[in-house]
Structures are given as C-alpha cells and as structure tokens.
Image (tube, rainbow, N blue to C red):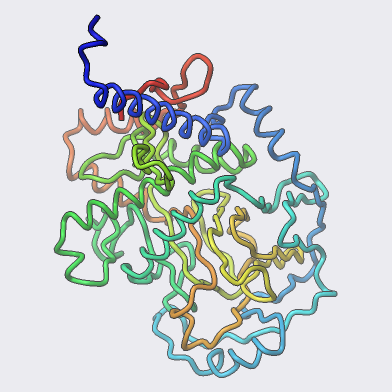
Length: 434
C-alpha cells in the first residue's frame, strides 16, 4: 500500500497540516457569521436578519428642540475639572487654520437640559415623532474583540505616521484637539485640480521613501476599512448604508484599494486574528467582496466643538475602537438639535446626520498632553464634497474614453457578495490550502 511507504513523520505532518487547514477555515466561517459579513444585500432575507440584529436596540423618540442644546459653536465641557483644564486653551490657543477667525467659547453642560441620553452600555435608535431616524449607537459592534484590538492598534499607529488634516466640506480643522488623519483617496490640495490620489500625509521621509512600508500601510488601511464597511452593511439601518451606496453609484466613485489604478468595487482584504496554533496563520483573507468607500478617517483623542457640515451623503457613522480609561464624563457625543447625549465607550458604532448640529465634549486631560496618551481611537467614513469632481477630472486626464466608460459602468453597479450555496463562506472551501 502507498500509505505504508510514506514515512511516519511525513504522515504526521500531513495530518497536522490538514487539521490546521480545517481549523483555519472554521475560524473564517465563524468570523463571517459572528460579524454579520454574510448579510449585505437588499433581499428580504438579508433585511430580516438586519432587522433582527437591530431589534436589540432601544427605540427612543425625541422631539426637536426650539433652541439647540448644547449651544452651537461652543466647546462642550461636562465637569469642573475639564472646564478648568481647558479654560486657557479655549481663550488663547494659537489659531493654525486660516478658516478660523476667533476662539470659540466653551459651555459647561447641564444634564437637566438634555432630552435623552444613551448610556455607555445602551444601544439606541433615536427617532423623531414622525418616525425619521435621526441618530443611533450600537454597542459591542464587533463580537470578536481580537479583531477590534488589532484594528485599533493599526489606527493608532496610523495616526502616529500621518499628519492631521483640514478637510473642506466636512468641517475638520487643524485647531481641533487630538488628531484626525485621512486614509484612502483624497481630493488633494484644493489648488491642484489634479490632486486626486491616495492620501499623501505621511510625516516622515523614511516612510515616504520606503515603498514596502507604503504598500503595507495601504493594504492594512484598505483592509481595516473593508472589514468595517462589510460589517456595517450587515448591521446598520438600510437608510444609512443606502446613503453611501447611492452616492457611490451615482458618481461612479472609486472604492478604497491599495495599488495604482485599482478602483474596482470588489477585491480582497485581509484581517489579522491572533492564533495559538503555529500552523494556523493569523491572516484571514476574503476575496471578491465589496470594498469600502474611497475615504476614511483615523481619529486619536479627537474632539470638535458643536458644528454642522456639508456632506455629500446624508449620513455619517464612526466606530469607536478603543477607550482605554472606559466611559467617563468627557469625550462624549452630543446632538443639540434634539438635546441628545451619546456616551462614548469602546467598540461602539455611532451614526448621525452631519447637517444637524453635533460635537464632542473636551477630554479630561492637559491640552498640551492630548497627543501623548491614548484616550480614544476611532475609524469613520467621510467623503469630502470635492472628491467626486476631482475623481472625474482625474479619470478624464488618465483614461481613454472607451476605458473610462467601462470604469464608470463597473463602479455604478450594485455590489453583492458571492456566497456558496449554504451562505457559509466566500468563494473557498473548508479544505482550502493556505
């Protein structure tokens, strides 16, 4: 028999390899189901699954206030300690952004004036009296904490490598405390009509001049965004995801993908999950799946006064990945038009209407030390109002008309996953060789 001729060590190694391969495939299947990566379409079955997931959220009806509270264009503080710590900064900090002509006042919050509060452990869908969704927060957004920790680490490191930016149309300012850094495609310098491209915001020459570093960073950034996007497609209310997909398709916008001239709506992404078996790789790949919207933001201890902004898609949402000190009376989110406070906590997804007043309270730290200690790390999708125009200009200058037509046709289509017959995995079998 052939088996008798195979050395025992080889047979044992082959058996271990098969066992590890099966274990790896099972981990991937588990993540697909746990993280709702197999729920993303508009079929009745997918809608029902999303509805069942969202059923865990409280439904809270809130009426619009006659006067927004906290007051617009104020920094929000929630206690005396934070009020004192930020007093000098609010009055005298150096203004670096030419769009800001003044120092904004701060306002000490009065809890009794708020209409509704989502506690740090409460998942809530906020509606107005007419049944319109106006905000939401979903706790324990990703059930796999190891994935959350890995993405949080990548985002935090990304903020160290990148410069903070001002972003026209979505209100980010260089004078905001903390860091907010672009990931993915941007419009570039507003004076450069050909500025479209991957964010050019690395701080150090050694990184800018190292193609291996740049390629690795772009792959990790696009992978984190793709995982977040696919999980959001299986979790968030339909009107939120449709706000993005409709805008992406209407303007045939590129999706976030590493590599030159790769803008396809589908592609591969990789997540890393620690493994206790040396034969089971940490990296888990998904192929031919929807890619993320073109632009994302990394945030580190970021806060902004009460403001509102122009936004090409109606909704925005963010994922608070880490908050090492836990929930507290600082760094919380406010929607003054309805008097809503959403307490910040780790692994929470928060959604809001950017055209409404909103902002984040100042943090319990020395303003001069806010970049030195991790208080909160987050990831969000934010598409600038100029990106569609810059993308069109880029395409017209880079591609022949016939190729451009094919690109636009592909990017304008609805993107769905390709699942196997039982919906258990993407395009690969359990016995996959890795």
